Image (tube, rainbow, N blue to C red; front, top):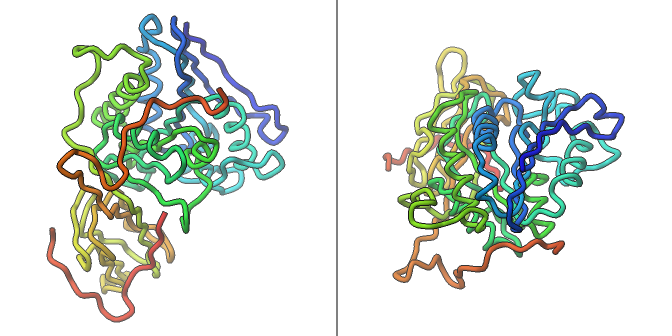
Length: 353
């Protein structure tokens, strides 16, 4: 059975919001999977992917329940506002689990968390690069008591990189998937697409990933002809480093998304209006560029790019480091480019998450 509805939050602050929800209930009991798209209003590929995928989902073959929030931040979508919600200028994905008495974004996060997270066996938050971000597809999960189950979700989604975010010392907090894992719900962010585009490749990355997650959770039959083929390789990374510019200027990247870099490699430069170099941006460690600001215009402290580093390579048994294991399915907690030496004082500011 498929139910479509418009959900209206009860809060006076959120009274004008209409959030489209599709709930698919299978003919057999099974887990509850919650899916989110549109937390950021200009990340269009995952919105298109989730909507189309839900329209084709066959509930006769489904076990359990899929809840799909098709557009979590409607006003950001309508206003074409990247990164933030127009009512308060806050990033919704830094406001979870929310505050029922806070700003617009905090109240929206609180509503989404209370209404849809609770009772979930697993959660996938679908994203893309925003209006001025290009990326190579990756998943992100958090160090937590459900980290292994979350890692398995990331592997099932099948994007090229699975990044584990350390909880201790993380600069960026308040994400939807982080709030879920703190509630003992295995959860991931899945990123594919970007730059305000809806491409067939990005949509397919998400729809294939969602189907693979259903098979992983035993919510769809998994015979030899049933599940999508496994990805060639998922690379496991343990650090997620964000590089910011210390100066306002023109951003000229030198290493695009998916590029392998070594420590000290030239990643790009920030130029003044005449084209003279204000800052050279170099790699603080070996890694892979996973996303990058695609707009030349950057302000001081603006985000330039992110590196995934600290790769964990499988040993001869296929295990990924000490203590690697394969656990049971999630349960409901409530039931090389050449290096270039930077000029003195020219290093970018770095944030990790």
